[in-house]
Image 1 (cartoon, rainbow over the protein chains, first blue to last red):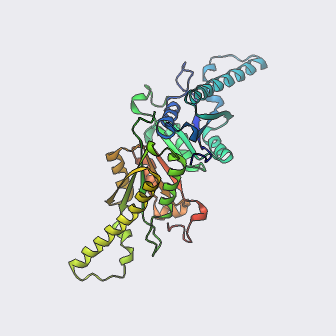
Image 2: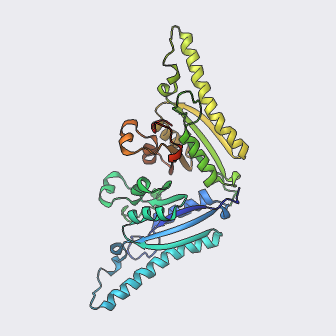
Image 3: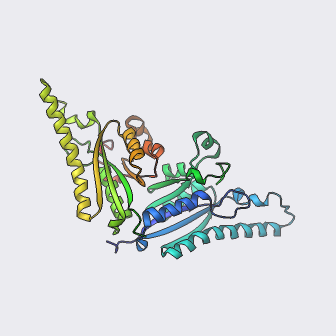
Length: 176
Length: 176
């Protein structure tokens, strides 16, 4: 049976919104850990993980709110920093897969995460999409929107949403 | 790693609504097949499947629309038939697991499927809930309601919805 091609699981990952914390968000690490622990388990040859990081120019530039842009060079260096941050994020997931011996691929796209994730699902046709979610209540959701809800509805493949566990939520639950 | 307890996947299954077709619905067979093919794969020791069938008295009694009930005995025999149908349904899934060598459990509950599935998730605490869906459009959904949407929102565990593939849809897509 393991001669079947591996099950391709796309995992949407993003950066933490917590200032000064240049890492994967709590919910994307949670979704990734859950996938390894509950789905892949010891069957490392049976799965391939596809990490998609969608960069939102606004969100990824929050560290630069106090910067002054005086020349085209300043924007170039900003773009360079953004790119470095995205690569750093993907490196974390690719390294962890490598340690486990699970095949993977990772790439970056720009745009609105929920739209881009669904477009990439259409293009790449994974067997399954895993997205983390902050597990916000209905009141908070109205204001922040949720990528996971949109994907569960619109992505052209089965979707698992992994909610952040309550004991992992940061002080402000909208952070991640 | 495989010394971890197996991943417990609850699969909600129901009967076909197609008259004279006393089998598992197309979408619940699809959800089950997908789970075996894409998640369990060759790692049969890593998973345990938990089949829950929720009987809706109305739905399961459709064959008896033309029956005449003249005595308490008639109802007893109806209940007996309902029970037999439920057992027959579960037998299909348990047999297939047995053939594959995947551990499983199966049980029947009565009530409103969406409510009962969420209550059973709370009680049994599976790692994952898999539900099939007819993949109806928004217009059809208004009239038939969908168990999968409710569970994806309210079940206290991650949920995968497996949509019925279009080439498997019966003449009337509300049937299953």
